[in-house]
Image 1 (cartoon, helix red, strand yellow):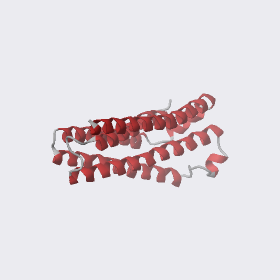
Image 2 (cartoon, rainbow, N blue to C red):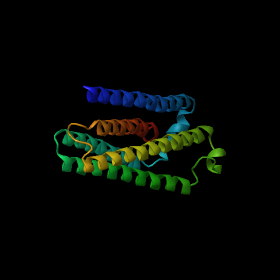
Image 3 (tube, one colour):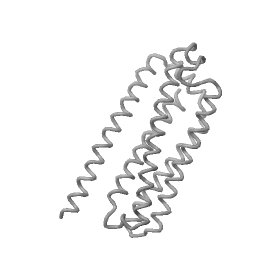
Image 4 (cartoon, rainbow, N blue to C red):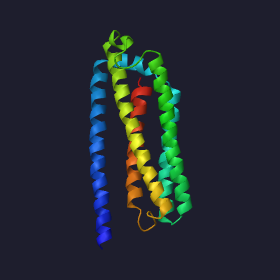
Length: 198
């Protein structure tokens, strides 16, 4: 009886933590909406300067990674340890690919002189400056969450290999998966706000 109660507490704790994450990104999305209402044309122009190919590829990568995490949880529940390890490894690799793409995207923008505090933004249209400021803040914060999610999945992978995560004891993997799904969900909002803004 006690382990079941502990598991419920762990799940509840994770949901409460995820709520704080929703509040964090939700607040940033509200801030985006406020500034968009003030500088709609500048935001639309800024969106056209971003590479939709990178954004689309990263969206596909994160969707695949969420599928891999879900598959790893299902595999553990079926006591298919090897399959769970493969799926978790695939999810972590997807996270790494996402960050590599984001690195090249940011590097390209910085090379063009588009970064917070650059002359191009400071002396340009105020709405464009705000757009790219929010772009770097929100995508940067999201990138940090990707790194944290990869670390959690890495720990879950290690625990699975060592037999600490099993069909009867997989709450840690479930919680890591919930975190990863939420981070992916945030990207589903970020992608259209910045890359598809019309």
